[in-house]
Length: 419
Length: 151
Image (cartoon, rainbow over all chains, first blue to last red; front, side):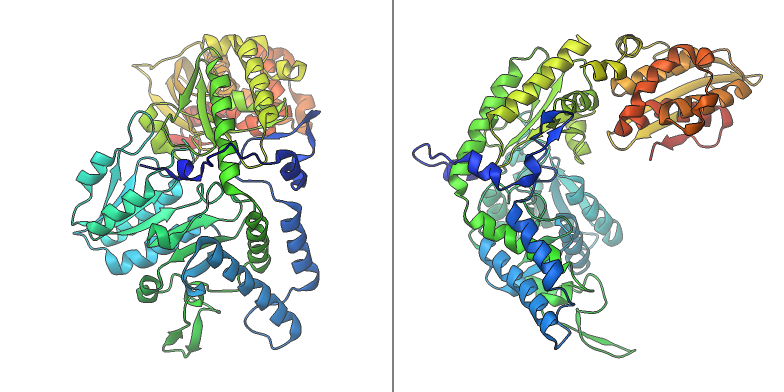
């Protein structure tokens, strides 16, 4: 099997100029508690490049008006910027048309939209929705809600002790009752890259539709929704160097066409009488209300920025950094890596014996290091590994060995304090 | 490091390493569950309340050093005290931990070892870790709810 990571790994060790990339991100250049910031909480939210911030400022200062309504110039500019961003997203993930790109508040809303709307027409009490034990709460709770409403059964694919999906179990659990498979492309808590192509092919063979949570994959690898043949793909702007409050749901147009609206209001209608409403065409049918225009523009600028990034070199660099960090961590007494799968994106989730993750987070923060500590909104993962919490360092294209060294210095302090 | 030592004082580290009154209490008549949704920490507090007095108290659960030490110190302090005394103590500890301007009224002498918890004032994200046990105690003695959350 060639994983996404391997397929992106260049033949020669292409290097990226990390210093130049770092210069693009103003948020990185500051001191925290008198120490240079080492930002290693990228799986929670990434920093934004200056070009994205500038595009949003320009949109706010010069081009703001409501979209799709006015005949005046500013409205036209705002509409062009908003729809231009949609076209950029379409191109970035290689969707067939802009009809298939629905703007949402983020991956969470994207999944809620599919679960609620698709669930209504596709699920009955005889059916099952298949998720996995490594899902983020945002790919669990929406399915629980629709299963409660429809009487469908929610089934979870277990993991192996390395934090990889148990594909034999997947094959067993995937039956003719399975109508929807909802799975994460990359685990936020473990970093595991799932063999999403296999998962999709097998689901389709079994007659199920596939919803992919791409929140953690889009920042690390190019995504081609048509090559994957996924039915839906959800992701957030703020985990891929873009703004918060904007995300995307990709869906195959034939499926989206058949689905009922998720919310009602302005934007999503053609005609309204007090008796009935004719819904707008795609993608507007799913975009009730005035959208997050500046967020969409920021996301468009993010995609422009990413177009200049050599993802294969970045993947190589992130892999090297993860290997380096893993090696350094394992030198520390009592350290344990949670999630040791073969194919991982830039996530190092770990525990230190006798020191709670929350304490680790506070101690390394004093050294200027930002990491996430807790259950990472993936409580079933914690339950599986029988731990209350982990510390998680997660890497982005601008992280370097100095960041890792600074983290290790902080961990050393934690060991001394609690030793 | 010095700033950190103000948070992780020796008393805190000791009570984290060796929590007092840790475990279940078979003859408890008040059992309260405390949850900190931010970090997923949970603690269960067992109280034997008789004649308006805490006769015995235990706790169990998982948590950070601040949360475990605060629970441990709380159980030490609560043992043998009346509901009225503990309600006053709750207010005092609350002022101590949140840096309430009225903290002048805090009687540091009577708080004794609990003063070690005051380091959390400089760490707003950690205040909830320290208050969880105290909210659980308050609910146990007033009997308002059997499950409490810091949110």
